[in-house]
Length: 116
Image 1 (cartoon, helix red, strand yellow):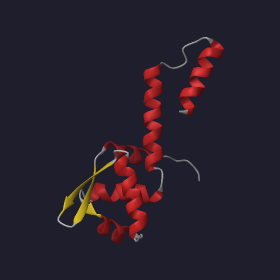
Image 2 (cartoon, rainbow, N blue to C red; image 1 turned 120 degrees about the vertical axis):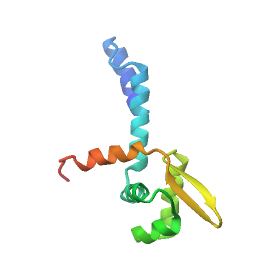
Image 3 (tube, rainbow, N blue to C red; image 1 turned 90 degrees about the horizontal axis):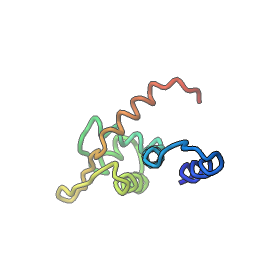
Image 4 (cartoon, rainbow, N blue to C red; image 1 turned 180 degrees about the vertical axis):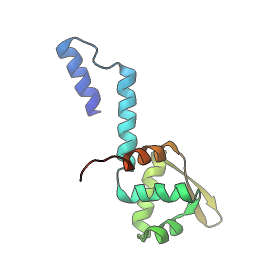
């Protein structure tokens, strides 16, 4: 929402159309997606689900070497925000990558030559 406020303030100050509202909404949506996946564990989960289209929490924990409670928290967050989907399979919950285009964003960023 910060971008939206900033742009509206700039429009009023300069009385010009810096960005139209549809572009502002797009930028807000993109920022929302990037914030959702901007964590090493979440990126690891997305990477695993690219390779293995359907995984349980236990499988993800084993592959990443992470604790179940923390991993479940990240999975729940990405599911609620629409990045992942989940289906029950017997006693397990199987996670899949719902927004496969997120993988393309990550691939682009892997090729970025930014310094840390």
